[in-house]
Image 1 (cartoon, one colour):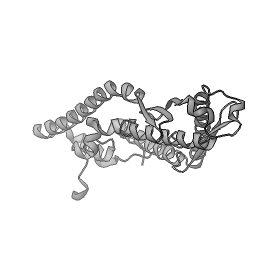
Image 2: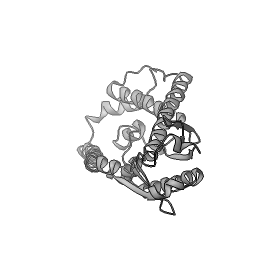
Image 3: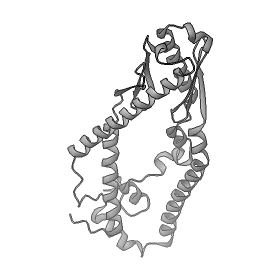
Image 4: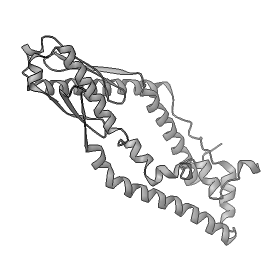
Length: 257
């Protein structure tokens, strides 16, 4: 079918393309993916997952030959940063494969079709109450979206940059991460660090990281979206052109067909 539905046909085409790209991005973000990085001295190695959270960390037994007790925290952050760079590179490669594997949708892909076009042609002559109902429905959706944007704009920067702290069980290591799971601080008890075994250093650092991630839980981007008016509205606000056209009275209800 030729894509001659005008603006609604273009909306349907864009929706199909956006849906395809969203699926490809999701496929490229494999939940079990792991990426490692080592600091510039080669003594600290970190492993992050697909969400950028540290899943493992190791400290080489020779670290004191390369770092002072005041430098180990920076080395940990350096290792994590390099692991995150490897994550970006891995995601880019995976996404490229996804894009190459699935061709773009055909230009005549439009979920609206003749039924919607017919309804649009008749809509100008519809009863006034039907036009008011459709306009009210559309206005309600727009107001919900506007409320969500206002709500998110006031919280997003603050929440995602706010530090959350976690400590190891023995309280020798303190770690700070943001609501976006970015590692922003690693501090060690210097007196303990002088004689601590590298296995215990790595273990307590992992414990502190886990505690910090737990503290930040519920403050990430997805959590903010879910708590916004748009997120709470859920399926009431949809960008599916089929559903949108049906709710505005421009397409028949599936139960009526």
